[in-house]
Image (cartoon, rainbow, N blue to C red):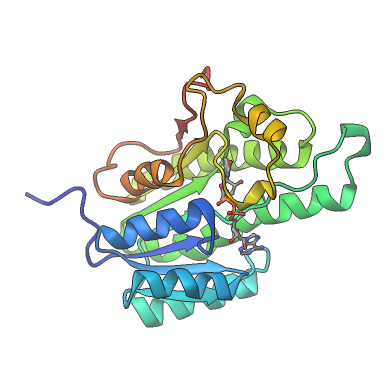
Length: 249
Ligand SMILES: NC(=O)c1ccc[n+]([C@@H]2O[C@H](COP(=O)([O-])OP(=O)(O)OC[C@H]3O[C@@H](n4cnc5c(N)ncnc54)[C@H](O)[C@@H]3O)[C@@H](O)[C@H]2O)c1
C-alpha cells in the first residue's frame, strides 16, 4: 500500500514563495519530503526561504506575468530538481482599495495580470509535462473575496473569481489525465499582502469571520499540502473553503 500523504521524491513549484502563504506552503511541502522550487519576483526573499529549507529547495527569480520568464523557470526547475508534479500558484497582490468609480484602470490591469494571467501562464507551463506523465496536482490560491465579493477592491475580487472559474475549466478538462486542479479560498491571513495593519483595519478584516480570527498560514499550508498529495485522489475543479465559517456555499 502506498503512503497517500507522502510526496517524497516529488518536485513542487510554489509561486510567491518568498512570503506569506506561499512561504508556508513551500515549507510544508519540503517538510513532507518534496523538492521545492521557490518562484518569486523577490529573489532575495525566495533565497532566504530556500536557505531555511535546505538542500532540496531552489530559489528562482520569476515574474509570473511574463510567459518567457515562467517557461525559463520551468525548464530550470526540471533541470535542477526533476520534472515537477505539483504546482501551487500563490503569487498575488491585493492592489488598491478605492471606490469603484475611482478604481484606477491601470491597477485593474495589473491586478488581473498578476493574479489571473500569472496563474494561467504557470499552469500552461506545467500542464504538458503533467499530462505526459499522467499525474499532476495544481493548487490555485484564490480567496473568499472571489466567492463573496468585498467592497472597494474590485480588481482583486474579479481576479479571484476568475481564478475559481479557471480552476473549474481546467479541472473538468484534465482530470482524465490524472492532473487534478483545485483552488483554496482563504479568509484574511495576517501577511504582507495588506501592508501595515491598523487596529481598525484588522478588526474590519475579521468582522465577517464567525471564528473571529485570521487564518494562519500553516493552516492554509496544511490544506494545500493535502491537495498536492496523492491523498487527494477524486476531487478536481473545486474551490476548498478555509474561512472560519465565513463562506455560505
Ligand atoms: N493574506 C490573505 O489574507 C489572503 C487571503 C486570501 C487569499 N490570499 C492569496 O494568497 C496568495 C498569497 O498572498 P500572501 O498573503 O502570501 O501575500 P504576500 O504579499 O505575503 O506574498 C505574495 C508573494 O507574491 C509575490 N509576487 C507578487 N507579484 C509577483 C509576480 N508578478 N511574480 C512573482 N511573484 C510575485 C510577492 O513578491 C510575494 O512574495 C495571493 O494570491 C493572495 O491573493 C491571501
